[in-house]
Length: 211
Image (cartoon, rainbow, N blue to C red; front, side):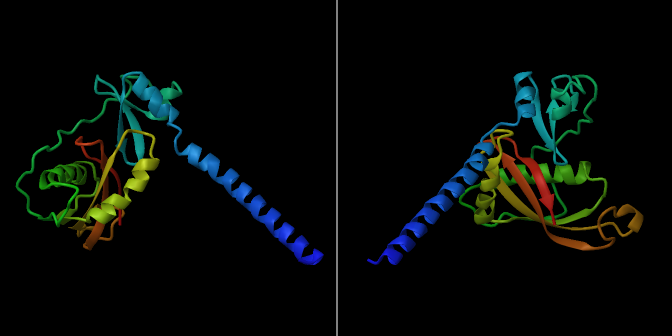
C-alpha cells in the first residue's frame, strides 16, 4: 500500500466514524423526547382528573362535570368548577341507522369492536359537528392501515393507548351554502378518515379526522 493510498483510507475511516457519531447524537434526543410524558397530562391525572381529547385539544375532566384545558389547569389559569362540560349522552349500543356499514374482514377487531367505534364516530358526527351532514356509509379501512396508525399511538405519551382503528365514511354536505361551513355545499365526500385509539378493550376515542 502506498503512502497516498494509506492516507486516503485513514481519512475515509475518520469521516465515517465522525458521521456515525453525529447521527447517533442527533437521534438520541429525539428518541428520548418521544418517551417523555406530557407534564400537563401527568398533573391532571395526579390530581384526580381524566383526560379527554376534543378538537385536537386535551381536556382535564373533573368529577363534578367541569373541565379545564390541561395546560390552563397546570398553570393555574383554570380550576375545577370553572367550566361545565356540555355532556351529551353517547350511544353505546348499535342503533337503527339509515347509512350503510361495511365491516370488511379483520383479524384484529370483531364486529362488536367496530360497532363501538362507529358509535363514537356518529356521536361526534351528529352531536359535535356544527355542520349537519348526512351520513351515507361507514366502512373499515383494513387491518394494515389500522396497524400502521399504531406508530402514532406508540409515540404518544399522553395516555396509555394500545390499539388503533381507522374507519372511512361517505357523507353529503348541506345544500345551503350558509349551512355547509367549511365544506363545499351539496357535495358527496368519500373516504373521509376517522382515527380512533383506545386502551385494550376500553372505549374508543376519536383522536383525528381528515379528508
